[in-house]
Length: 74
Image (cartoon, rainbow, N blue to C red; front, top):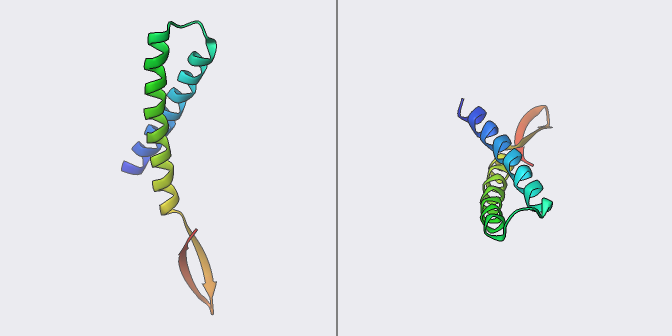
């Protein structure tokens, strides 16, 4: 269940990050709002990156040696 929440959190964060980028690219927002959005985007980027790094650490490859299967880091 917790992994599902993390995946949803990651997806929601990524979706919001894309929305923030789109707003910043629009060039129609006041500077103060743009700075606030930029700060939010940096936070979202850090959060998403951390989630990806945690997921990467959990990824394992199953390999066979002499008929015995072993989990090895990717």
